[in-house]
Structure formats: structure tokens, C-alpha cells
Image (cartoon, rainbow, N blue to C red; front, top):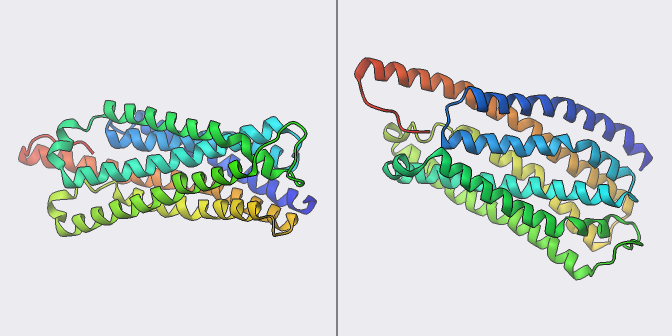
Length: 288
């Protein structure tokens, strides 16, 4: 593992130094410049999860190379699980939100408020924290080379169940729901583009976030399934583990690019909408 420390440390430093300022700037932009809409609430909280995840990156590096720090292993694994579940739940909720906005624009205009979005976000965070706290302590069992810890005994069946649950709840089920909802949104936007262009404007950022999240988290789940099988050399699994974590941290650095792109386009679109309202008195603009 010694030969992995230097490149892994360099990558962690690059991700940390780039990810913290980028996500911090996104939070500033969303909090100060973007209008208070349900869409802004979704993306702002998505950026919060990325920032929390990257801030604890040094702890992940410490737990990766000093395996006997049980508290660091448990805390970093809990934070990683929280980031995975909260990101998957928020992306799924974003897709549902877009779908409702396209399918029922009149209902969404009357009932879809930032306050309701914020309440839903609190529920999603509580649900994500519940999953993370329940299973975060199990990864110490897997990450110990002899699968035995002096301070921690656990049933292997429970660990297998935890891996299956985090794959199903944090990856596969959200992916299936998002693909179904996004397909409907794209199809509806193509069929009724002239009427729904306002409702589908943030779709571009959603289409960027979805593949980034699932492609970067797929190696993480594959690694845990391989680790549970115990049929591969530990050195090879450690390389896979490091690569999987680099990818998921990298995804948290790519997300701000999508946010900032949406912000610029969103501001230009708002300006055009205001100019259009001033010229033709077309009435109030629906919330994005």
C-alpha cells in the first residue's frame, strides 16, 4: 500500500483544494444571486452535501492508511454513506419535481413552493442520516484484513445485508426511478416544447448530474461486493478501493461546474423573461 500513498495524497489534495472553493462559491451564488425558488432549494442542498463530503476528505485519507483508527473509519464511512444516500435521494426528488412541473404545470405553480421544498429536504436528510448511522459502523469489519477487530464483532450476514441495502436504496432503485422520470420529461419536452420550455429549463443540469453520480458511484458498489467475496488479493482490493473513492470525490468537484453553468443560463433566461414581460405584459412568470 505504500506506493499508493503519494498519488492518492496528491489526488486528494487537488480534489480538496478545488472542491471546497467551487462548492463554497456555488452555495454563495445560490444563496445570494439565484431567486428563492423550489429549484434553487434542491440544487443548494445538493451543493451542501458535496461540500460536507469534501471537507471530511482528510479524514478519509487518514482512515484509508491507518486502519486501526476505528473512530476515523466509522466516521468517514458514515459520512460517505450519508453523501451517497442524500445525493441519490435528492436527484430522485429533483426528477420527480421536474416530472410534476412538466405533467401538471398549473398544480405546480400553485403548490410548489420553496417552503415545501425545504421541508422535503429536511425529511430526505433525516432519512439519509438514518441509513448512514445504522450501517456506517459495519465497514470496519470489512476493512480489517483478517476480518476481525479486537473491539468490534459483527455477524457477516448483517454486513452482506447492509451492502445489498446500500446498493439497492442508494443506487439501483434511484437509478431506475430517475431513468423512467427523465425519459418522460425529455419526451414531453420534445412533444410540447413551445409550452413547457420554462418548466424544463433546469433539465440540462439534471442530465449532467445523473450520469456523473451513477458512473462515479458504480465502482464503489462493485468494490464492496468484491471485498465481501474475499476471493481477491487484499492489495488488489486496496487499489480498487482507492480508485473508487477518487471517483466519488471527483464527482463532487464536477457538480459545481454544472451548477455554475445552470446559474449563467438561468440568469440569462430570467433576463429575457423580464424583458418579454415588460414588452408584452404577458403576466407573471411561473416559478422554476
